Image 1 (cartoon, one colour):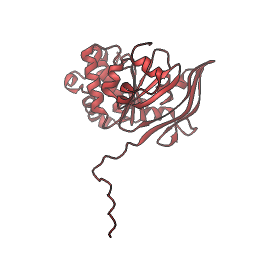
Image 2: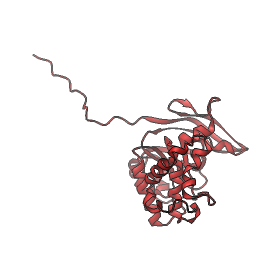
Image 3: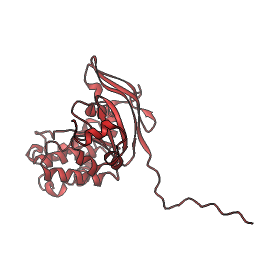
Image 4: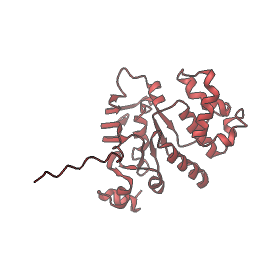
Length: 268
């Protein structure tokens, strides 16, 4: 009798995604008001993570802790840990400015610098972090604008003001500005809330294109958007992370009744 050979691992099977950011026991305050309560989760590399929940539930505060923007508010404080590839981003040896180069951010309202040209808007982050190389400026501008799906629309008007663009173009310019510094993570705080449906569709398409090269975390009040763009979704309520799982699972078979109540429209 011979032993049955063991099945060898399938070499063609995709590797399990790597955890890029690990959050443990994170709580945050503004003065005496606690806005996050003991949040723990892992954000996977080269995936899109959506953060949903009603207004005031701590969504924006949460993603601002991921690149230390929370601490820019004088009365803000936090406890717990946020690790980027195993390194505490709140450690004494971490320069917040350089951290924000690794962890870029796009805000709810497009905020290009209106007195700067389109070209200078793209380069602004590099100049701020002291990593600007004038000899590579044209290359960086074209690469970032192409990544933001804006190059063909603005390549002949790079000297025009960033404020001369449409709302959707301005938001893509802000994305290009973030991409120009070659971040590893892109945080997006309701990036489509001020845009029309056509511009929103362009941003969502762009998110799909960027996911192969970047780890993306998007706050959205639009649950349909979360289902369209994300791999994983976290539902926040009153500053607590109620449920965090694969997006399709969260929306089709939520494990917590509060999640189900929210996604079915019973509150929020």
